[in-house]
Image (cartoon, rainbow, N blue to C red; front, side, top):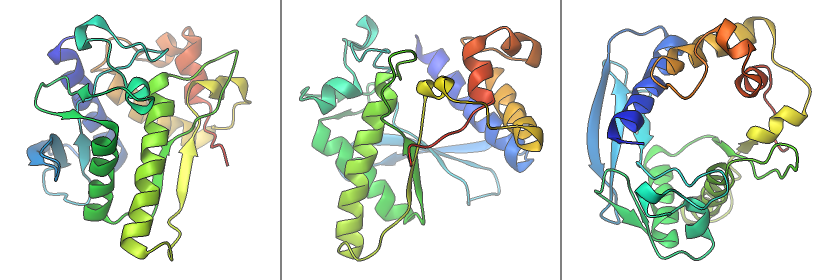
Length: 221
């Protein structure tokens, strides 16, 4: 979709974090140049530097990894499989596979995370995962391994957790009570900015995909 859609999804992410931290102060975005010359947006709640959301503005690669016409059919999956370059939808940056891994590694080196969370690469015939989820997991894994080696010479093992995406629908509900209420509140805060998802308890209860996601959280470990 157009620029207004992906910018709105970024606002939705900020709204979800506002709900989780109880903030109404607004967000301050900054454009930052990465070591490879690419650009990303870093946004933090005003008055709270402990939280940062980083947006690389990479295109949606489509469920199957074939991309969309509006982004020249580029995708993370194609890049991972040998594609030449992936161009950001804001037209400010582009990456080959090595450069994207290097960008993620550079981000890790700046923030020095005590733990890293990413998507999983779980295969499912009944509910296939999105190509972006699985490719992002591979890029994160590659950057993680390079970061541990360069930062700690392989002597420190930083916890890496991979969360299952769409295939979670194959599994039993395991989020309930207060955890479910908080998860729903954060999701509905986001949903106000994304017309492609359900936006209320009543709406989501008739939308099997999102209702299933709200009631479940699993990792591949």
